[in-house]
Image (cartoon, rainbow, N blue to C red; front, side, top):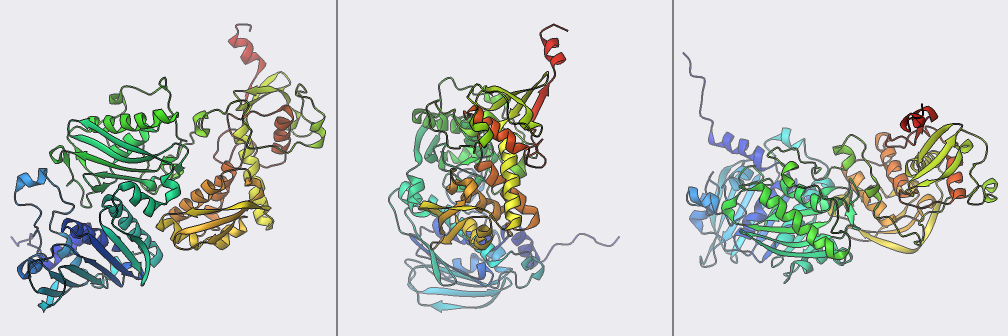
Length: 604
C-alpha cells in the first residue's frame, strides 16, 4: 500500500503557521512590539511604508540578543519565555510560543540586527522567505532592530487580500495605541511614510497616557476605577460616564495582566455594568486592566491570544460588572433601586453567544431585529427642563389652545382628534370610535429621513453654521476613512475640514440637525464609514447615514410636547411617504378598536 501521510517540510510548516500569526501587516507589528516590551524596552520606534506592505521597521532599546540567540530566534518553537509545562500557567510575558519570528520571516525579507547589553558587538542576520542568506557581526547600540520588507512577496495570493494602504495603516495605529495604553512607562513613536503620527513619551500614569492618545477632552469625562476584589482579582483604569458613548465597541480597551484582549465574557460584563443607563446599541469608552493570578486564566486558547478562558468565569464576570456599577452609582446615573436582573447565573452560561457586538460592528449589523425602549433616550428630563427640539407649528395650528384637540383637516394623521400625550412619548388620538397611539419619535424620525433624502437628491440640503466650531478627534482607522469622505459629507450638509493628524473641525451642520449633538453624530458617521469602508454616497450605505442623521435630529421619547407641536407633527406625517413605519421598520402607530376596548372592560 503506498504511503499517503508525509511529514511536511520545515519551510511549509512556517508558512502554515504564518497563516495563523500573520494576518496582515498589523499582525507583524503586534508580534514585534510584544517582543520589544518583553525585552524591557523603554523606547520603541515603528516605521511603516505603504501601510506596512513595503516596509515595517521596529527599533527598541531592550536587552538585545547575542550571536547564538539571534540565530535561534528564527527557529520554530524557540523561546526565552517558558521552560516547562508549568510555565504555561504562570505567564508574565506577552509572547511565549516561539512562532512569531520564524513565521514572519517565511513570508518576507527580514533583516534582524541585535546587540546584547553586555555583548560588546552586535549581530546581523538577513533572511528571505525563511532562508538565511547572510549573517555577520556589526556595530550598534544595545537593543534590537527588525526590518520587514515586501510582506507576502512569496505568497501573492495572500498579498492580494490586503486592503488599501490607509486601511492597513489604520490597523497598525490601533495596535500601537493598545500597546501604548498598556505601557505608559514606554516611549512610542510611529512614523508612516516618514511622517510621525503617534509620539508619546514616557509617562508616570495611565491618565496621562490616555490623554495623550485618546485626547484630553475625553479624559475629563472618564471616571477612575481602582478596586481590589480579593481572590487575586484587581481592576483599574477608567470608564466613561454614560453620557459619553460610541456606536461601536472600538473604544472599549480591555486588558488582562497587561495583554490586550477582546474576550466576550469581559465585554459582556462591562456592558452589563452599563445596562439600563446606556442607549441600546451604544457602547462606553473604557480602558480597563484586570489583574488576575495567571494560574486562573488560560491565554493560549486562540492563535492571536485575543480571547482567554477563565477557570471561574462567573467570578470574573460579576466582579467586573459590580465594579462598574459601583463606579457609576456615586455619579448619579444609577439608583439603588435600579431593576438589575439577578442572579447573573441565569444570564451567563458556558455558551459563547454573549450579546456584546464584536469589535468594529454596529448594533444594527449585529442585532437584525429592531429593539428600542424608553431607556434608549436617557433619563426623563424634569418638566422645567428646556426642550431641545421645537416643532414648527403651522399657521392653522397656532390658534389652538392647549385644550384644542383636533388637528387641521387633510390626510389621515392630521384628521385625528388629539387627546393628549402618554408618558411624554406617545401621542394619544381618537379616530372615530377607535383609539390611536402614535410613537412621536418613530413618526418624526420618518419625517426627518424622508426630508433629508429629498433635499439630498435635489442638492438643496439646508445648512446652518455653528457659532462655535467644534474640534473632533477620531481614532486612526476612522480618521483615515473619514478624510476621504469630506466632499461627500459636504453634500450631506456638513461643513468639516481636516485639522491636522486625526482631528477635524466641524463648522456647520444640516439645518435639520442644528439643535442636536453634532459632535456625536459626526463620530457615528465616521464609525459607519469606517465600517462600510467606502463612500457614504454609495447607494447601499446612503440610507444608513440618513437614518443615523434622522435619529439624531428628531423628537425623542420622554419629551413633553404641546398640543400645537403634536398637531404639527401629525400634519408633517401626512406629507411623507411610508408614514406607517419609521426607517428602522418600527410601526409609527397602533390602533385599538372600541369593541376591543369594551371587551377588556367586560362590556361586550
